[in-house]
Image (cartoon, rainbow, N blue to C red; front, side):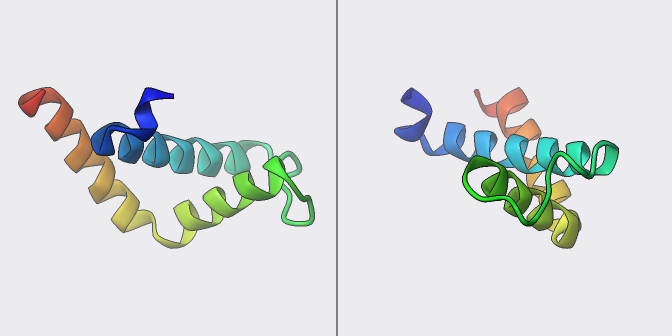
Length: 72
């Protein structure tokens, strides 16, 4: 709940969810299906962002890792 009030924590949670959903879709494609609604639909959208914007997500993950390691 406190991650919603801290911008750095919110970005970390978003990046981790995108990376996790993309990896899960790679391993178990039937689990994250695009035809599902609700939470699984949101997970599919996160996986799609991870697939299409993977260079930007990778740069964001590296930036957040350096930020957490050296600035916190």
